Length: 132
Image (cartoon, rainbow, N blue to C red; front, side, top):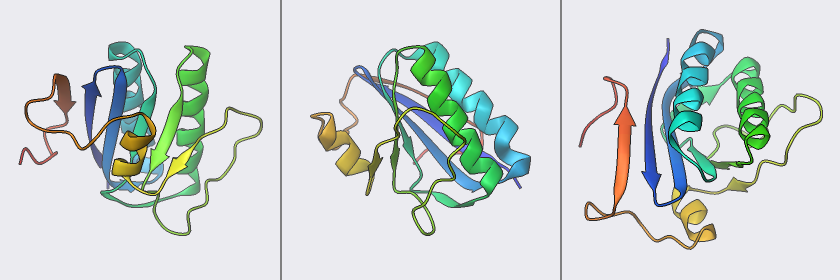
């Protein structure tokens, strides 16, 4: 089982939304999505986990590695709507990863309201991501 993802740039804020199960079989695809975000954005990235059903320890480690990759490029990673018990398996020393209860709270922390179709934004997604 794998994941689907959508990456949206709203001004200087990137939102990487992930759906499915972030397990060992999905880590490579997740890393590809993070690479997409690194190549196409400049500001912080909010990892929206609203549609994520669950994650494995390997998936959690992939998230901490994504935070390291973004930090090395002067960008931050934040989490919104984490699944399960709310814990993230740490992978040694690394950057802080702020956690928001949902995507609306993450946007609000960056002075943004809910997104609308009229917003100036760019978006990319996997074929499996719903368009509506």
